[in-house]
Image (cartoon, rainbow, N blue to C red; front, top):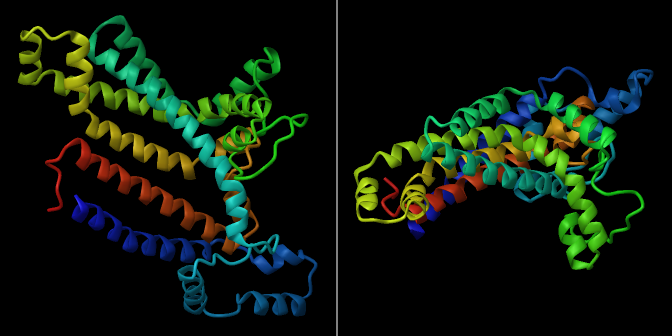
Length: 334
């Protein structure tokens, strides 16, 4: 098991290196001059030249990449060109918002998706099976920006059940310690802020969960159906075990490998792909921050943010692989 874990950890190094190469050179293919974006279109050529020299933008790309990697190996992501703040500091301020949103979304997607998939598999060709699969197909096909706007209009503007946008109401005070509002409200015993934070999470998290929820439901159904046809399941039923025991103890555990794979991949995607949801709900997360960095040609911000998100994504997949070995001991390093 230790050898398996070490193998997965070492495999992260070439992956992250490859991501750094792709991100660095692709961001430099985007049209536009960061110096001009910072000084404005009316800046004279002399001022632009001086700023390019200060930022190192006048150097060849391989020199700029070497400087970027030397800083990265020291844990320094540089400074954002827009604000001159440390990229690591800005990421630390915004990443917790995205993690909270992605965690809530994947919890909603996993609970509802797995329950729907298990019920559909155990009641194959029933009305529930047909309805849930139609809804899952709809969830995969539905544009997130449209669904988010519809939910905002119905549940916020018309019914007034949940807040419209943001992470916390203006009249609620919260002492910020970790930038995770849920954790900070628990640490400070601020239950009003805890409740308000959860209510602000409801709409964006549900909106973000629709696609992974539909995917998890379909994968759970197909995986459970495959397991339920196995001989040992028929044997368990013949021995008189209850359907609950057969379905949840014997069938579900053996069907978990593809389900866990999908959940891990979807969670990684949510961490870096919540840009539309964060934009619609004015959620101050890292996805919206990276998008604004692309618009401003802020190379350091985009590179640093993408590296952090990519590292989290491959780390999540590493833990998923380790979880495989725990669920199924037959999985070993070849």
